[in-house]
Length: 266
Ligand code: BTN
View: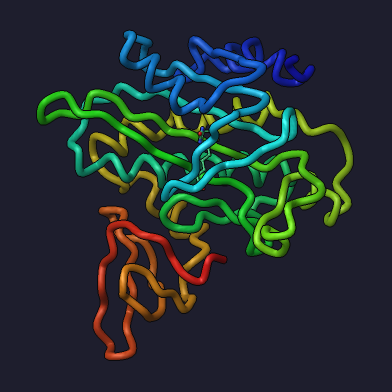
């Protein structure tokens, strides 16, 4: 069973006339849309193919965590990218994708500065996680064969599991707390993310973060905060052009962290 909004996703995405979202596979149930996209890639699916599902039976988050989402409640999708680029640029896909998700979430909530990107792959609203990005890729010899960007956005969830109390939120909860009325359309959010990603992803994977760096810095959840990541503790000073988090330690020295889990988990 596909919800009324996702049932229209193919038309809404096609109307935007972009390279991403063609074809768009709308599934009632799947194990993981990232696995669908990876399988599709191996079977020759084109750049821009997207898989979305009402429910996943084996949804994955980063670091081997499960990504749980009740049927029909949220937006779960994966985009297949076939953009020739250097392997070192692949992690930038999570940041650009996170920025695209941020823009779409802020629009859905109706407040542009409501949503922030938390390096390296989360989107936060009111200091709580509203979306996550899982990037997976495959090499062919020394070149990148494909990149899959998997996105989970909390949309309708109104009650969150106890262990996520105070840690996670949803578009519905954030709209309610701001008195925003009306229906939320997951197809529009999907189209918004894909449109923004379509605009920037090729440029970033081939030439670096430059084109989105100012936007990323403006919406950086960690800037100025005390963090601990990969053994570096100090104040986060922003994301550099290579996508690394700059952390200024108590000794005054800056460290550049390429990947990892930032504590505390905001
Ligand atoms: C994270 O924050 O740890 C990343 C979560 C990514 C979840 C999405 S849901 C759609 C896609 N399919 C998956 O199995 N995972 C990603």
